[in-house]
Length: 340
Figure 1 (cartoon, rainbow, N blue to C red):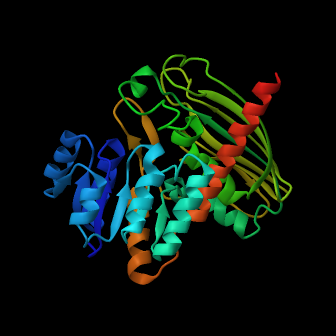
Figure 2 (figure 1 turned 30 degrees about the vertical axis):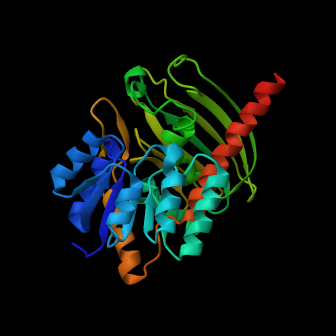
């Protein structure tokens, strides 16, 4: 356990995961939620102070080192900026924000305050993802020609009930809440995106969510590679697949499973990925599963960065690029809808 002190803003489901790992690796000092019962319950579980506004927490807990932002997507920028201005480091849940402008403002505030702004992208720590990323970086696959990303999950009406999820203002869209980790991997492993053609629609969630539940996109990367993204939250009754297939001049690989947890196929010239660790289980929320639960590795990295000046696992610029790619996909779909 380190001496780094943390405070949590937002005491919903994902905050439980944060609190668990903070308790193991650092010191949880205080929690905050505008719903007093949520703050009280989490505070009681870990024997810490509960606050009911971010301002109160930031004012009365000056010894905290890092504020973990677990509030709704649409509040990530506001809460991060408030914490940075008060002189705290920030660890922000995905997505970093739900528009590019807010991401830029967050980065500027971190620079002004000379504080770290960490962004959670836990899928980077999935064992098959790490192995394929290393194979790409060391030239084992040669030049990357194309990539296919498939995100086929289930999110039913109960998931959105009595929640900020599904709201355009607070949620942002399916690519932000369900699949931003997957989009991050496209940027991290393949590169930045130049052009996008996209279509989306809301097929099964009319009157439930204010945006798309399904979409397809064609991507052109700056390095010349092309790719496709197919996503939906309409997989019948349960999650089906989260997969990434990469075609290179020296090999083809597919990472699959429900949440990019299995190396399903590999055929690489004079090379084979072997002895992969099992990896962590997915985030289990009772009625549905999320991505692989790698928050332990995120917190280990945060502490290593702050205490040992280690390299950050996901920097704020990379968080911005994820949002920028999602923004390009949604804007392309909006143009197609307008022209049809």
